[in-house]
Length: 174
Length: 338
Image 1 (spheres, rainbow over the protein chains, first blue to last red):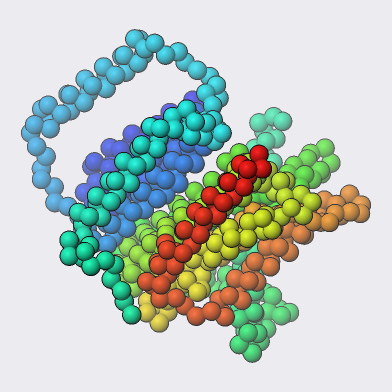
Image 2: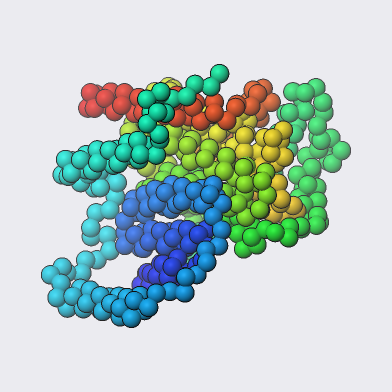
C-alpha cells in the first residue's frame, strides 16, 4: 500500500515536472523541471526494484547530461523567452490528439496486453543481471550502438570546427 | 524487525551520522587553520578554548548573527535553493559509508552504517554528481561576473574529474566483485588492502578527489586573485556557511571513500574486552580518515595552483587514459587468474 502511494506520488511529480517544462518561459527553469522528471523517474525505477537502473539514471541523466544543459544555458546567458501566444493548430489538433493517444495507449495496456503483472523483484535488476544482458546476450547490438554514438560525436566535432582549424591540428599555446 | 523499530533505528542513526559529519566538517576547518598556521610558522587560532578548539563553535555563532544579504538583481528562487542543494547532496552520501563493524547495544544490534545498499558506491557517485547543481546554480543566479565564471569553472572541472574519479574505482570493483561498500571492505581482510594491488587507481583517485572537491592545487573555481571567491562571492551569513560546510563535508566523504576503497576501511588489529572490540574498528577508521584530511591540508599549503588549461589537459589527457589503462590491466589479470 505504502509502496503504491509512493509510486503514484512520484509519478505525479514526474508528470507535473514535464508539464512545467513546457509552461516555463525561462530556459533554466525548464532545464530544472527536466531534472525533476529524471529524478522522479529514477525513484520509480527504485520502487520497481531496479536499484542499479536508479543509480545509473541519476548519475548519467540527472547528473551528467542535465549538467551540460545547465552549463550551456549559463554560457549562452539565455534570458526569458517571449511568448508567441501559442498556435491555433496546437490547441485545435494537438490537445485532443494527445488525449486520444493517451486513452488509446492506456486502453491497450489495460485490456489488450499479453503481458502479465509481475511482483516487484521478480525481474532481475541487479548489476550482475544487467551486465549479463549487456555484455553477453546483447553484446553485438550494444557495441554497435556505442560505435554509432562515437561516430555521432566525431561528426559533431567535425561540423562545429572550421576546416582550417581541423587541418592545422590542435592549437599549441606556449 | 517491525517497521516502527526500523524507522526509529534509522532515524537515530541518520541524526547521529549528520551530527558527526557536521562536527567533522567544522573541525576540519580548525585542522586546516591550525596546520596551515604551523606550515607558515604561525600559531593559528589559540584564543577560543584550549588550542583554539572552540573556534568552530565561535565561527558558527558568528555566521548565524551576520546580516543575510540578498542582492537586488539575483534570481531569488535559485539563489536561495543553491546552498540548500549543495548541502543536501553533501550530506546524502554519508548514508552508505560504514564506520565500523556490527555492534550490539542490549537486545538490539546494528551495523555502524545508516544503510548498506548493493549499489552503495553508486549512491556516493550519484550524490557528488548532483552536488554540481548547487555550485552551478549559485554561480548563475547570483547575477555577477565573478560568480558566473566561478560557477562555470567549478561545474566544468567537477564533471571532467568525476569521470576519472569513477573510473579509478572500477579496478577496485573488479577485484571485489561488488558495489556494496561493506563487501568491498570485507574483501580486503588480512591486510589485502587495495592500495597494494591498485596503486595506479589510488593515485588517480586521490588527484581526481582533490579536483572534485575544488581544493588546491585545483581550486580555480575560487581563485582569490582572479575571481574574489568564485561561485559564492555574493553569499553571506548562513548561506555562505552552507557552501562552506558542504565543501568540507565533501572532503570528509572523499577521505572516507579513499579509506574504504584502498586502505581497508575499519579493518585493523582488534582484541581485548567486547567494548574495546566494538570501538577499535571505529578508531582505525577515524585515524585513516584523519590521515587523508591532513594530507588534504598539507597538499593545499605546499603546491601552487594550476592554470585552467593545464587543469583540463591534465584531467582529460593524463588521468583519464591512466584510469582506463588501469581498468584494462586489472580486468585482464583478474580474468587470467580466473
